[in-house]
Length: 211
Image (cartoon, rainbow, N blue to C red):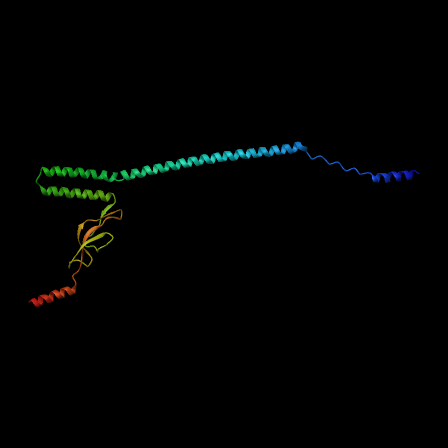
């Protein structure tokens, strides 16, 4: 009898719905999630502040660089203008004593009839002037009995000469100058053109016929 009741109770229990296990609450709960979100927002704010500070520093560097570049351009333009305006200052300062010497020579020439002394004075001034020019990189082009060079010579005419080789400089009309090796002014010269042998024979034949 007791066994039947236990069995009946067990069968009745099988028909009832089984209890499900209650879900466990999340670790930490909503408070933990809120705290995590707060920490993440604070990290973002810190990173944002660092980025803003870095951007401000870069902008400050950029502005300083722009200002320095602008100052450099102004300084370079000013130095260029000064170089153009006062570039010959040293040369002119060296020439001024020569001008003083010419003034003294002219004054002496007005009170003297010694032409030879005046000529020597001019020769002295010429030497001083050439020395001054040489000091500043100017040198004369040598033309005496030199072969004609179109880079430094300008042929004004051709002349026949038995004393010079063909295409050799015979005379100089105007001196030429170099400035630190670069042509400043070509020398104007006359160039030798040797008489042709055929022309000589023709002239000899004409002389023989005339005799």
